Image 1: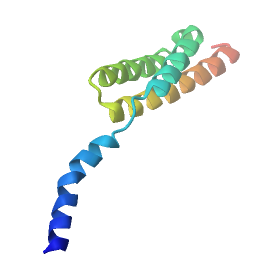
Image 2: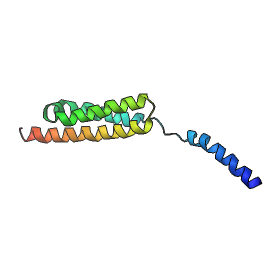
Image 3: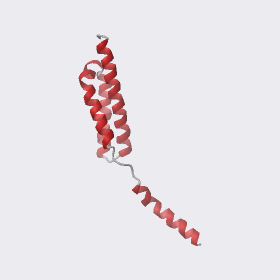
Image 4: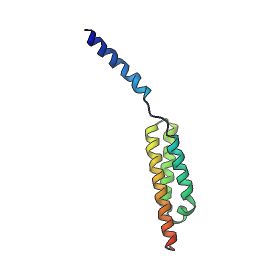
Length: 100
């Protein structure tokens, strides 16, 4: 019986322990995404507008998820926005260099 009681106590404590290991707010990821979107804007808005717009929309969704305290979604969307913004910038710079 003592083992069974110990197992019950452990099982009752698991939700409390799980709450303690909640993920942190993705402040750094949001800052990096914002920076990438802002940096890409001047050239990407002219030469890669759809790609830049997609990055901006993902950043907006990340900010909303952050406001809802959905850290996982906010982190994922911010990371996607950063990658999309860097892609938009690279594509735009290639188009500008090609004279299109």
